[in-house]
Image 1 (tube, one colour):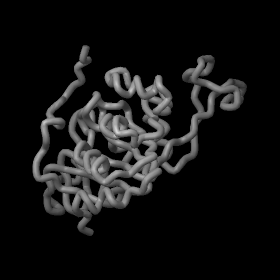
Image 2 (cartoon, helix red, strand yellow):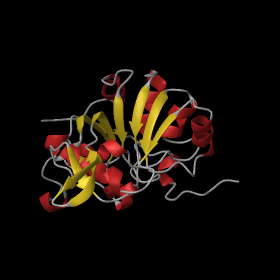
Image 3 (cartoon, one colour):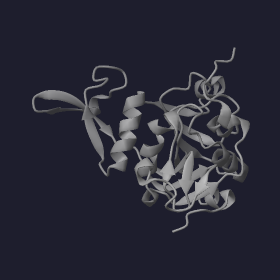
Length: 231
């Protein structure tokens, strides 16, 4: 089945108030074009799940700066002064998780489970008493799975059916998010015919993809391969 569609139609499927996973590890793997279209269309009261908040002025920071995000579930925002200011002024609710924990919460949802036991952070401020339980004579913390209504992802290559290949650190969260959202929207700058991508190279099979947007070109944002702290 051909999954390709226009970027306008793909993003129009997202309503205000949606919970959205956004792929990427810093800039690599971040779907900048899908984010820009979400910004243009005007959806509000969003909950975003992303490893980081990008830097000020790019990626999901654009949505935050326009007041379109009510809640951000993330691992860190230290490279985005704007997001820190919005959090400190209580205009943005930020929920932090250790990086590996966030990845596992997403992976668990994608595997069809509801939570998992861990001893990470057992006696720290990130653990609430109601999360604690005993199993086989030891105390553990219950972490709940984390799913979303939509996932927005960037794939380095794809075919028209929606088979995806990621590059570099995009592999950290994008494959997990593709399995943990009800609807998966993907952008790619390189779309091939079915069969042109080798099966053993596919990172996300087409069964997990709902809409595929082929980008005519990549903007400068995609070429930022690492964050630089701005003073």
